[in-house]
Every structure is written in C-alpha cells, then in structure tokens.
Length: 86
Length: 100
Length: 174
Image (cartoon, rainbow over all chains, first blue to last red; front, side, top):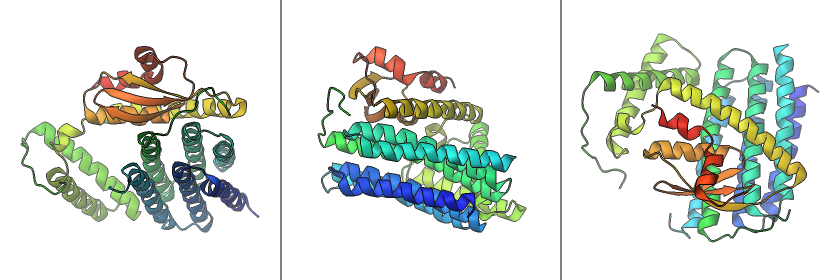
C-alpha cells in the first residue's frame, strides 16, 4: 500500500468526524458547518484519487464540487436566515 | 527529493485537518467552533494541496490544483461568514465566561 | 432586478482598453489551464469567450462600469496575496495553540474602517475572516461587526488596530 492510498483512508476517517457533527449538532448552523467540513474533505479526496489514477480530468469534478458546495452552504444559511424567503 | 518534501507537507496538512475535526467535536459554543474550524481547516487544505502539487510535478495537473486552491481560498471565508451571519441574525447569543 | 439593462457611460480610452485586455489575457490563460493546452487556437477561443463574458457581465449584472468596480493593480494583488498567506499560517498556528490549551474568550466587537470602495471593504472583510481568531459577522457602510475569539478590549479603535493589522494600509495604497 502506497503513501497516497493511506492519505485517502485518513481523509475518509476525518470526513466521518464531520458526519458526526452533522448528526449530533444541536442547531442547524452546526449541521451546515459540518457539511462545509465534509465538502472540503471530499475535494481533497478527489484530488488524491486523480493523483493515484493519473487522470487529470477528475480534477474538473473537484472544481465543480467546490462550486456546488459553496453555493449550497450559502443558500441554506440564507434560507434559514430569511425564514424561508430567499 | 521534491516528492519527499511533498509527502512531508501532505502529512503536516493532514495533522492540521485532524486538529480541525477534533476541535469541531470538542468545543461546546457554536461561534468558537465556527471561528477555530474555518481557520485550521483552511490551513490544512492549503498545505495538503501544495503537497499534492509538489508530488505531481510541473504539468497541467499542478496548474489545475492551483486553480482549485485559489478558488477555495476565495470562497471558504465567504461561506463561514454566511453561516455565522445567519446564526447572528437569528439571535444566537454569545456564551460568556469561556467554558470549553 | 438583475436583468435590467442599464446604460451607464462607458468611455473609450487607452487606460480602459489596457485594463480590459489584461483581464482578457487572464481569462485566456485560465481557459488554457482548463483545456490542458496552450495551443494558439485554444488561447484565441478562450479570449473570445472571455470577452463575451466580460461584456455580458458589464451590461446585465454590474451596477456601474466594470473597470471602475474592480480597480486592483496586478503587482499589488501579488503582494497582498503573499501577505495573506503569511497571515493565514500565523492564524493556523495560533488556533492550534488555542485548541490545545482551550483558552477562549469569545465576544462580538465593532470596528470602523477608512476605506470607502465597497469592493475593497469586502476584500478587507474577507481577509479579516481568514486572519487569527476573527470572523466578520456583518457590515453596514464603514462599520464591521467581528467575532473575536480572544477578546481583550471592547473599544472600537483599540480593537480595530489589533484586528485590521496592516491589511488596510496595503489596500489604501493604489
């Protein structure tokens, strides 16, 4: 097992920490914070997956994922802030 | 040599990220969680991706990772600000007398 | 609201053309990175798409002139970026210290800024969010509400001097 495979496993375990915060988080903002954390872990995981397979088009998925994660967390927090009227 | 330095940077960045996940589970107050986690997570993310750039070498792969890095540096503070502003506008109070 | 066509003046001058050309070159390079080749055809295609995007943004989304909205020199951007990276790493280490010791004193303080350009104010708020122990909550004109994790004073001027550090000076200089 190479170093990069080990990195993927560590990143997956760290993502589970974010999942735990999403599950136990008392308020909705804690859950959005956990979601933010998970999305950054997923971007790192995609980058290392592309590095292992040596396919650079997988990085486009990482770029799209970072866009969607950003728009998603901003939209959910604005939705909660305006109480349903975006 | 450069690849070795990249591995060292990746390990260092993973340590930072692990600290961020530990802190988001440890602290009890929402504001302290938001502030600490956004910082540590940004540092960990930047370090890990710079390590990946060093491992990959000089090609288009590295340039694409740099693009992801710049984009993430621009958007992470914005989304943290959006979450914190939402909590503040909904009336979440700061808990005084720093209890951990 | 967003789709209204506004007819703000667009003066034709050498300075304006140079600025637009610089932005177009940047877009062409980013297009080249995405399509993984710096062949002349790709760069020309990227420049055309960049120009279309630029004029569409200018005409349909922005309230005022594109060049007047984003006045930010290239070399100043690079210097600002390096300063930001140093501050981000300092922030990471100070946050690490706070996680280990668990010393926190969270509070919300209000600071004032001298800047008047909305783009520069949002850039300052962005940098404050990235630097040690602070997150910007809200901005109203020149007032910024900031969460400070290690609150030592509630006086706006004193807190502003500690939080803003040298970002404001760097942004003031054109």
